[in-house]
Image (cartoon, rainbow, N blue to C red; front, side):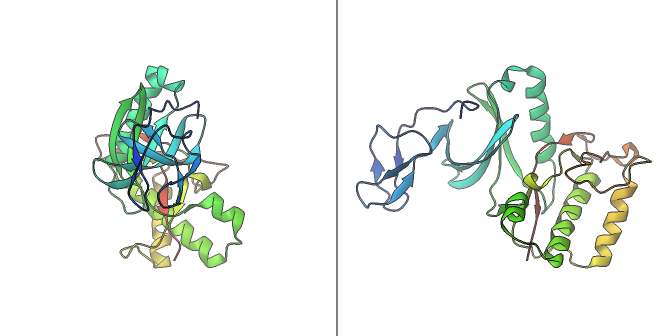
Length: 247
C-alpha cells in the first residue's frame, strides 16, 4: 500500500449491527471483530471521503479498489494513480485524459466514470461498481466451454465497437481488464451481427493491421481520423475494464 497515501480513519460502523466502532482501529484492510455483535469486519482504508474495502488490482501505474461513497450512499470502484507517478505532470495529465475519455463514453459494455479528482496529490477517478469476476480469474479457476468463449468475445467486440464509434481507443485489451457480469437485456446475441461488428472493427484499423487484439498483440486499434465525432477522439483508454458478460 506504499503506492497510495491513506487518511486517518476517524470513525466507521459495523455493517451488520450499525453500531459506530471506537478508535483506535487496526491497520486498514485487516480483520477485526465487532464487540457488539461478533461480526468479522474488514477495516476500511480512507481516501478523501471514500472508504476503501478491497484492493481489486494493482499495477505499476495505478491501484483499483472496491470502495464506498458516503456522499451518495453507493458502492463505487476507485482507481488511484500511484504516488510516485503522481509527481510527473505529464502522467497526471494523461490520467486525466483517460478519465475524460472514459466519462464521454456511452456503452452498456464499458464501466461508467463518475468523477475525476486529486487528493493527497494523487489523481483518482470514480467508476461504476459492478459485481463480477475478471476474465483472468475465471480462466485460472474454470475450464471454459466453447459457448462461454464465444459469449465473452462477443461482449468484448461490442464494447470495442462502441468505443471506436465514439472516437476512443482501448490501449490494453487483456484478461485482467475484462470484467464479466450478467448479460444486459439489450445486448445483441445474433452471431451474424457479431461477424458484422468484427468486420466493422477491422475497417477502423490502419492498413496492414487487421488483427483482433489479444494479450500478445494489443494495442493494435487506432481510430480512423475521418470517422471521429467525439471531441476527445484520439484519446486512449488504458486499463478501462470492458464489461463482457457470460449468461
